[in-house]
Length: 140
Ligand code: CMP
Image (cartoon, rainbow, N blue to C red; front, top):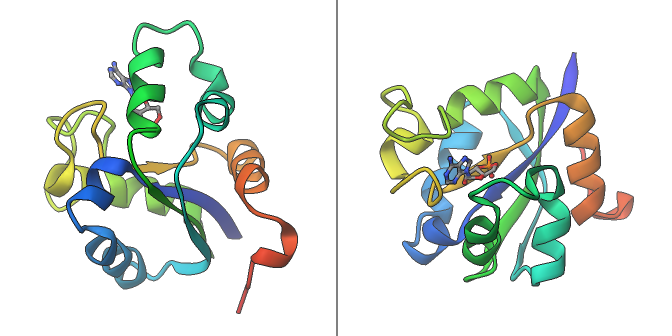
């Protein structure tokens, strides 16, 4: 099935000039970037995005980090895109991420982990709609 997934290049990666490197890895993996923009998240926008984690011990630091600088947000499309992009990212904890994954190569810690990707079709639909209007998405 052709799926769409939602991706973020997080502030730690934008700050280190890794946007191009990460886009290259996404495209080389055969995923198409069909929408993209740079945004500096407000506290409310970040809190709403991570609402499912509210109350967890890492939530406040996560929101502070995600609002600390600009991010790139993308919609990716391709066969089995959700699982394939998660594979490309590697595990949340960079110490557990497989060799050659984005997080193994670029993440600095569990929090400063360079990229986000949707974990399910329901999350993907919610996350895409949270950042993009239908007319900002350009399938090809
Ligand atoms: P992400 O895929 O964006 O989803 C939630 C984020 O919370 C995750 O990536 C990490 O950046 C962060 N996170 C998850 N678990 C922890 C943790 N145990 N400690 C610190 N940050 C975490």
